[in-house]
Every structure is written in structure tokens, then in C-alpha cells.
Image (cartoon, rainbow, N blue to C red; front, side):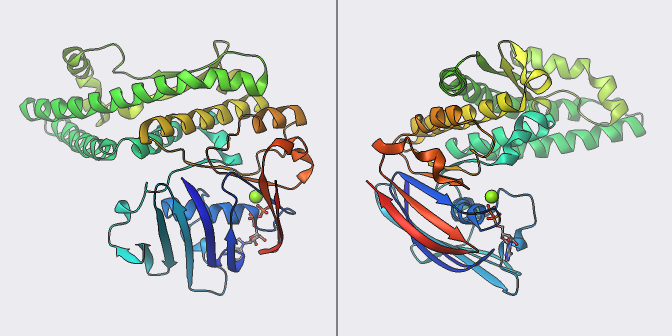
Length: 366
Ligand SMILES: Nc1ncnc2c1ncn2[C@@H]1O[C@H](COP(=O)(O)OP(=O)(O)O)[C@@H](O)[C@H]1O
Ligand SMILES: [Mg+2]
């Protein structure tokens, strides 16, 4: 999957941009604040219709404008035109100039793997951040996953409400609760299996990639779930065992909504013991593993975006990462300095120089 061109209209600090890309490597460089992240954010918005940044969606629209547009041609086997419009009134999307009424029918047509400095939160934050990331990744390669997840969350809510009611009214009738629990377990087992599969797939790649970047260390991801090593009866029994506690708290204390991931480097938890550098290397290894899994599952490599990855890495690590890149997929790298790329002699690529929301120079290197 490759993007041929990107057009931006009133998008962040780009009033108007029309830019074509190299099929394998694009290096976007410029001073801090010039608009490098904004540009790759444009590509990301074209794919998923929202930003990876935490700020509210309306900040995507240029100050003093009321509507912004992102457009691009993406080719896989066929060439397809995509358009995303954002305004105060909401979002509109088009494929080949035809309006797509449900945004969910638009998303996941273009797959992107992105590294952004905030991704370090994936290791440092609470389990819910890791679950969220995992959910997004799996849903990109497994069509039914989101439906099961929504169903699980719906039943979980109903179960929690019923637990509260039972507690308040000293209601001992657990027949209805059992029905809810059974449904929860059915959806939960599906989600557990998909998560387990995904984490195992990541583990097939991540250690080798980590060694190529960092040189030493054995990296592994561990999936932690209450459902681990249990059959359906055992899972159901676990809910029964927790019933008193669940009723007291008015919420379900066990289940896949408490799952977590652990990054283990030489057996030690990276969250507790890892340096920033090791955490960063682990995240990059995770992203490169995702790239391979997406290719395995969908038959096509996603677009890879590495935003500001090189700013605090030493040149040796940078070269190790550059040597991982393949021509088979399209990569976008943002950087403040072209000095990092002297070793790229074998690769053909394009450099794009940005100043204050404009392209001031483009050049192809063969
Ligand atoms: N909605 C907006 N309208 C106009 N300018 C914006 C908007 N959002 C962000 N900017 C500007 O974009 C610039 C930051 O761009 P960014 O892509 O993050 O820079 P960098 O090149 O460092 O990655 C800042 O100057 C900021 O003021
Ligand atoms: Mg930036």
C-alpha cells in the first residue's frame, strides 16, 4: 500500500499543499515547528480520519478557517482516491468521489503503522493504554474484533448495573446474572484468543528486531489475562468465586477488561527497570513487528511513519533502524537533520524540505 500524492487544504499550518511521494522512502526535514508532524498527521488522518495527537479534533483545521480537507491517491492493486473533510459540523469522507455515509466503512482501507514520541506511553502508562493500542491493532487485521469488543463492553455494563441492584435490594436471584455472565464469558473467550494470537505473532518477530536495533538483550511481550490457561467452566467458576466482591463494589473485578501487556527485557519488566532508550527501542521493535503481522494477515504492507524518531538516538542505532527498512513498503521519516542519512547510498528516496507550512525544496536521490 503506497500513497501517490497528498493534498492538504486549511490543514494545521498548511493553507494549501500538493505533494507527490517516492514509492519507498520519503524524508521530511525542517526546523522545529515548521510542519513536519502536521504533514505526516495529514497522511494519518487520510487513513483513520482522526489524529494520533491528543488535542481536540478541531485543532486540525487551520486557525481562521472553518473547513479543512485532506485528499490522497493510494494504490494497492488498484488506485483509489480518498478524501476527508472536517468542519465544525463534523466529518465527511469520500472514496473515489462517492460519499461514504458511515465513517466506519472508510476506516481500515488504508493501513498505517506510526511511531510518534508519545508512543512511549505504551510502556509507561496504565494497562488501559496498552489495551486500547492492542484493540486498535487487532481490529485493523480482524474484521469482527470490534463487534465482539463492543458486545463485551455492553454486557459488562449491564452486569455491573445488575450487581449494584442485587446489592441494594438484597436480591439473591442470580439466574439473570448467570445469563449475563455466560454471555460475557463467550465474548471474552473470543477476545482473549485474538489477543493471545496477536501477542504470539508479535513475539515471532520482536526479539530479532530488537537485537538488530539494540545489539543485545532478549525482548519478549507477555500477555496477562485472568482467562489465561482456563477452560470455559473454569472461567465461569472464577466469576462465581468473585461474586461477593463484585456485588460489594458494584462492578466486575475479573475479565478481559483488566488484561495487560508486559514488556520483558532479559526477563525484567521494562516499565519498572528499563531506561528510556531501551523502552524506545522496544516500542520501535513492536512497530516493526506490527508491520510484518499486517503484511501476513492482509497480504499488503501498511505505510510506515516514523515521526521524530531519530532526535535522541545515537547514529549507530539510527543506522541499525535504517537497515531494517525495506523497499517493499513506503516509509515517511521526519527529522531536523539530513546528516543521519549519509549511509543511505544504496536506497533511492526523496527529501522534502519544509518551512512554515510550505515545501521549499523537493529532490529525488537515486
Ligand atoms: N490549526 C492550526 N492552524 C495553524 N497553525 C497550526 C495549527 N495547529 C498547529 N499549527 C502550527 O503548526 C506548527 C507545528 O507544526 P509541527 O508539524 O508540529 O512541527 P514540527 O515540524 O516540529 O513537527 C506550529 O507552528 C503551530 O503553531
Ligand atoms: Mg514534530
